[in-house]
Length: 193
Image (cartoon, rainbow, N blue to C red; front, side, top):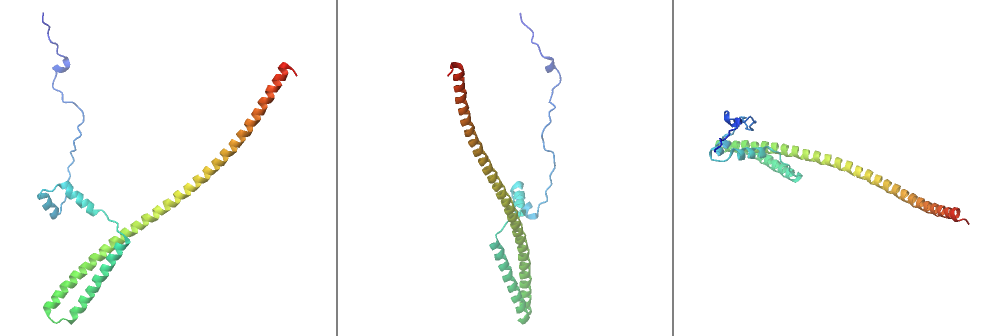
């Protein structure tokens, strides 16, 4: 005799797709790219790489004091060249030569301004580094003071421990003497003299 296959009532109803939340990012991001970045994107470079490079370029760089002095020297040299070019412009007579020198002066002035901005940037970074150094020095002093206090507390605890050990040894000797006395007294009380 054959039996009928039973189908559960759960499976007889409509199709169920579940009601769990789906973690799909639906935010829309817009980017404003420079013409050079747009050209790189069109050339096939990934957007993440372009943006990461821009982010890395915007982060400040820390320099040494020697590099700061080198930039200062370079700025001074460019200023001297600018002054020489200005002095040369008064002695030349040809208008073409004057125009060329004017362009050189403008370029040199632009370089001087650029170097001054760079110096200001390096100076700011140097001052930030010095402030961080001073803060770390203060933290170091605080930690050294804390170490000293802990050493003193440790020495006090060691001295207290030694006192307790001495007292314990003394009490053990007294206890030993009392045990001997109690034993002798008990022997006398039990057996007599």
